[in-house]
Image (cartoon, protein in one colour):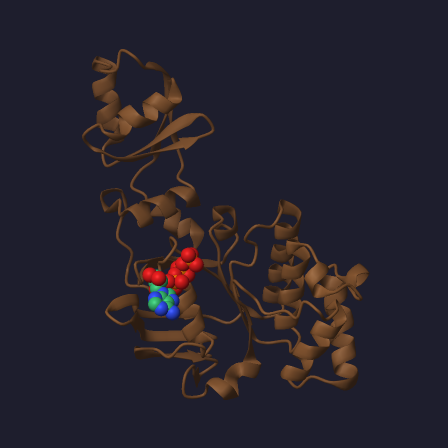
Length: 318
Ligand code: ATP
């Protein structure tokens, strides 16, 4: 079997007494779009920085294309591209000058560099901006340029830390089109995102909670981890309903979805049966309910809020 593009073996990182990454073991096959999910502070960036040789693991190991991420960190730098949350473009250089600079840093030069720059300018919609100073670009364009710079040496693996954060839907789509394109050519993508529609687009998703990898599966399998369907109630006034229903015994949590209240409970059917007998909220009008299929937002909520009674346990992530 071929080596995985990325492999982590009990990879851990602490800052003083505080554990940021609590020993992650998993692998990512080549060509995959792997989505790394988790709430703020879950440890995603720290994991990515260790993989990129920018932070020394406290314990455990990791490999990219079979090379150790720390011992061989200088050697493997040419094998991956990294787009950090706060990326380092040169604001006083033009778009093309930035690309030239990063080309030089990755030892790409001459004709291959010129060809590569033209391809990237075209693919990332930056042709019209080639002489614009990086500092004058909009947030979306700057992000496109940062991605272009990380791809200048045609790396086999690309790490992107929230690449679409703060972008409009058109630019988000453009970036995802590019990721699909790269993946279809065999590039492995390791991406963090807080957008659940983007998590749906990944071939596999890892869910990190307080430094621990709780699950690593396809989005479909993750959604199938829900026991049964979810209860969605039409109750008015909806804001009052949210407050009252979340404190009902047996309700783990509630969420507002398109004016309806989604209820997370181990036994929603029993709740409905009881409410049909007696609706205990005279100030709330129950207009109807339905059973809905969970989506990635529900998955995220269930994992990050620890709603384990409504999730079937996954096998140990690999
Ligand atoms: P976000 O979604 O907000 O970017 P994250 O999942 O990427 O969050 P990390 O940035 O990896 O999370 O942070 C994980 C934990 O490690 C947090 O508690 C954070 O405060 C801590 N941490 C990260 N970097 C450092 C550092 N250099 N020194 C001390 N603590 C740190």
